[in-house]
Length: 481
Ligand code: ADP
Ligand code: LRH
Image (tube, rainbow, N blue to C red; front, side, top):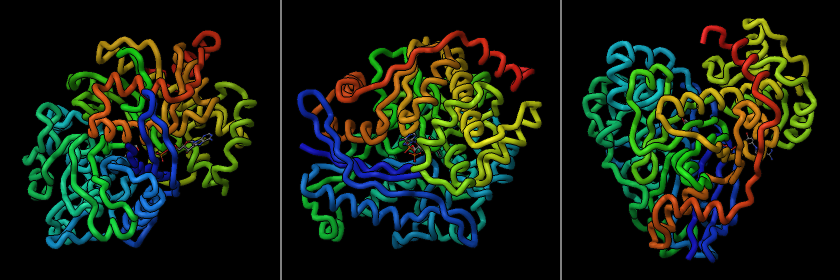
C-alpha cells in the first residue's frame, strides 16, 4: 500500500511516494520543483496556481504506484481568500511582505502582548496570520472573502472540493486558543474580520475526501483519497525526528531553523513569552515549544546576492570550513535579516555594530552564517530546556540543513552535546507516516519514530573540544544577557 506526500517548502517542493515494508519506510521522490516568492505591484506573493500545477505533475508521476492517499503540508501562516463561489481572491501574500511591519505592532499594542500570548501561546512574529489579516482589514479582498484557507488546505480544496482547516497549521495563525485548540472568534473580531471566514477544524489523520473528477482525469489517480497530515511542515518534520527517548531537542533546518522541544502541553508562562517562545500544536496533541531562527535563508539570500545557485554550495562550504573559526557571529534571530535582500551587507553592518571584524570573503561570510546559526541553536535549546524543565540528552537536526556537515558539527560544538543529523526529508517522511497510520498500519508517535530510525542512515556528530570559545562569542554578541 503506497502513499504520496506533497511537501511545499519556501525554497522547493516535492512529491514523495512511500510504503511500509518490514518495519521500514521506503521512499521515492517522484517530482521536485523550485519555489520562491514573486513581487507584484501590490507586494510579495506566492504562485499558488503554479504550485498546484506542480502537485498535479507530481501526482501524475506517482500514478503508476496507485497511492491510496495523498497528504499535503507546507510552510505555515500564509493563506488564500475565497469568494462565495470558491474562487481565489488574488494570489496569496508571502509572509515576508512588508505590509505587516506596522500592523503587527498595532495589534500587539491594542490587545496587549501578555493577553495575546495567554490566548494563542505564540512567539511574536510579525507575519503570523492574525497580523496579516489586521493589515488586510478594511480592504476589498477581505470584504469579498467568504473563507480563508491556509496553503495546504487551499491545495486540499483544489484537490477535493472540500474546505477545512488542519489543526497543526491553524495553530500558527495566532487565532487558535492554545489550551482548547478551538478558533478564538473574539481575536478575529478584534483585528477586524468576520470569524465565519475560519473553516471548521480537523486533525491529522482525518480523511478529507476523494479527488475531484478533473483531478482524476489530469493525474490518472482514480481511488486516491486526500488525508490530512501535520499540514504545518514543521509538525510533519517533528514526527519525522528519529528520537528514541523523550529527552531530545530538534532543529528543523531549511529556510528556517525551528529549534525546540516536544511537550505534552503548552508553556504559557511570562518567562516563555519574554523569551519569545512559541507553542505550536503538533501531531497527536503534542506541543512544539520552539523558537523560529532565521535559518538557511541567510545563506540562500547570500547566494542570490552573489549571483550563485545551489550548485555552488559545496565549494562555498569547503571555503567556509577553511575560514577562521568564530571570527565574528551575528544574531540569527535579528529581524534585520527577515526581508529579502543583500545578506552579506547586512551581516557586515551587524559585525561593525558589535565591534567584530567584517567577514572579508565569501567563505568567511558563510562561516559567519553557519556559526551564527549554531550559536542560535544552542541558545534556543538551552532556553527551551530551562523554560520547560525538559532534559535534553541529544539534538536531532533534520531537514535540508542536515546535508550541511559543517552546520551539524558546529551545532554539536556550540552545545557541547551530541547531534544526530537526518533525515533530510523528515517533513515528507512525517507526512507519509501519518497517512500510513490513517490507513491502519502504525500506532503511536513512538512507533512512527522507530520506523524513521530503522529506515534512514543517520550521521552522528560529537562535540570537538570545550565550549569556551562559543561562550566567549556569545558574551561578545550579547554582553548584557
Ligand atoms: P525548505 O523546506 O524551507 O524549502 P529544505 O528543508 O528543502 O528547505 O532545505 C533547503 C536548504 O538545505 C538549502 O537552502 C540548503 O542550504 C540546504 N541544502 C540542501 N541540499 C544541500 C546540500 N547538498 N549540501 C548542503 N546544504 C544543502
Ligand atoms: C517553516 C515554517 C515555519 C514558519 C515559517 C513561516 O517552513 O513553516 O515553521 O514559522 O515557515
